[in-house]
Amino acid sequence: MSKTTKRYIKVGDWMFEVKMVRAIRVEEFGQPYDAIAHMTFNGNEVYVDSQLSSADENLGRKDLDAFLNFAQMMDVENFRYDRFQNGERRSRNIKMVKSVENAEPQPNIRLVK
Image (cartoon, rainbow, N blue to C red; front, side, top):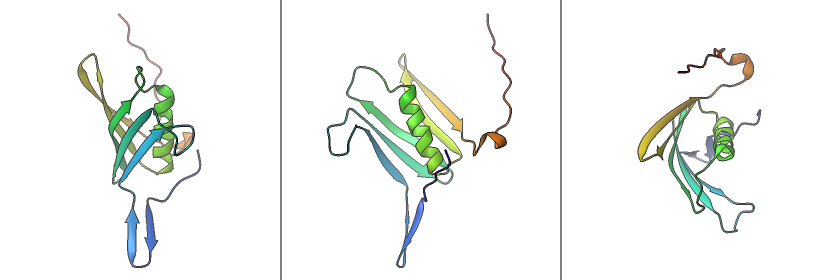
């Protein structure tokens, strides 16, 4: 993804900064949506404050990919979120990379019992 969006916009004597975003899952704006998330931007990091779905299933990989693509467009370095799984809170921090050339190689090692 090469398209980036400015997080700072100057209008007159005012500087406007994107600090909070509400995301809704819907085919067309104005229609009823079935999921919502709030994101807070702080420096080079974005934190997903909440995730809520009216459907019985949790938000899935396709939803996370959309969030990550948006975070990349907003030019952040870290993407963080929490979710509850089996009654336990699990935190996750995803380090964003600018491009494949800048990515650090990750070993393909899997620990098994």
